[in-house]
Image 1 (cartoon, helix red, strand yellow):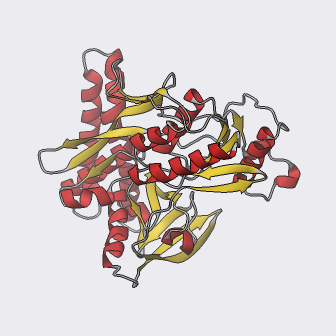
Image 2 (tube, helix red, strand yellow):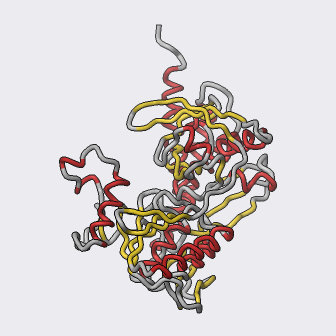
Image 3 (cartoon, one colour):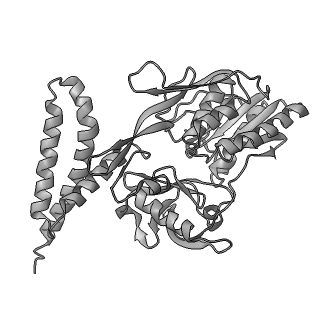
Length: 407
């Protein structure tokens, strides 16, 4: 017997597939099209198609649908289509909860983002509960607390993790079950969320060269970093590796404070689209604490303020970037209130280093280290090892910088 609901379910899948991109088109593409069509007809065309699609879904879906639910899903899909840091928040998310659920929030050392509906670990702090549990940057997070993340907006995923951290008291952690997918393999782990001290900067040795590992970019991190850098200058070491791999988020002011340890003068600026005058400027008049040669390590999980720091060091301190292209977002969001209590947090401006482009796309390293350039004998080595090895070779004079654009 033919399932009478089969065609309706198939229609629903097609309708939803149309619904989300069309809404994104209303917010993004139509605005761009209006630049070419001054009459504004493009905007109304997309709105009409969206309205028609919404009505068809309501009329033909196998069960009665709530228009509010459909519209909320469409808004979530629209912001997801813009960039991983833009988000739609329903009225049920209170102002007090907002900071814990928006993109960039960390829970148990884990920073989650969503891209095209897929939740992934954008950063995992070293020594954190998430790192101890085995989560790695780049892992797809398919389930949290038994719920499939594909069906959850990012704020709801972060809400689950925030709740677990709230339940943790003293030495008693609260465990959260997380299902991750890595290299095609699925694994279920338990993250023991518990209050922990944030990581701090440290200096290590890498084949005879000092390596400054920047663990966080916030106000509390700048003083320890300054002390470490001043100590290196006093020892007379004139070649330094600055490690920004896996460092996402943070405060641009803190990034500028770290950059000021190596450069002075104008460092960066925040600009809105189409406006010449910067919203904010970053600069330093103090003498640098370190005057040696710099190499900066970056990878796909270097994001936000860390990308700004990398760009400032490249432009103002003549540092060489070594690694893979960075994440590609160092922006600021505006909070837009809707009449029904819902909110949109949209990227409205981007940071740039002095003389550089807005960081709305990946930074291209001066020395690119990627899978395409692997030697056969290095096929099983982690890319992070190869990035560090290439930096050491460059500082040792064994390797030359080549201009190689990312594909």
